[in-house]
Image (tube, rainbow, N blue to C red; front, side, top):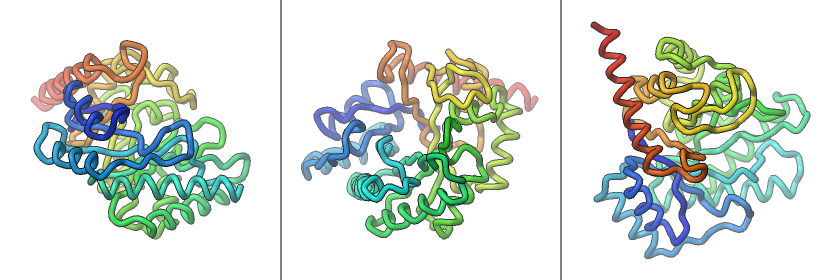
Length: 290
């Protein structure tokens, strides 16, 4: 796995890369624009060029973009759909420019409507955004299942993929905290393996392109998205070690989003902890094979 974290783009993309290197990251995740406003960020051409140069020669081997949380592709409101489409297209085009491995997207919220009515609206907007961009994949992220959020099960993710015409650019990002919160017991390597078996059967392992390793402040089936530092939550060291050493996740970027042990953005201590847990998980797997 390529272990990394979400890093700030304050000062530009090259600065984000530098922060990732300082944290000891092998992969990074960035916002495509300010997460608190609709106005898109316009990166300078020389900043993009420097970022790509650093990516080609440095220790960081993967970058993904997280779309902003303001987006709701399931909305029926015309203005919200217009803003969501504009933001998502911008994120995908930025992904094209910087060579990102994908744009992570929360599918949205049905806002009280039946999911079967909301899912086609998500697919319609996503297909439009893909048509307006070139190559960057779009990664549907599984959700914790709070309220009317979509994408809490592999069946819903598969339904979205099918509604999008099974396009190759449609992929999946699995979040460990969201899996636990939405009722998937992944606290041990054996239990995680069963869940991933289910994912393989329904979605297909080839669709899984990116991972979020977030521990959870809340227990199994809570439907609450409350992150904890790796090993410090309900998954604990054993569950996080299992996630970080799952053989079917090999070579994928696995990113911690925070808050970290310092109570804010991910720190080097969090990335180091992930590497320790990965090594712990690999040792445990070797012992079980003997």
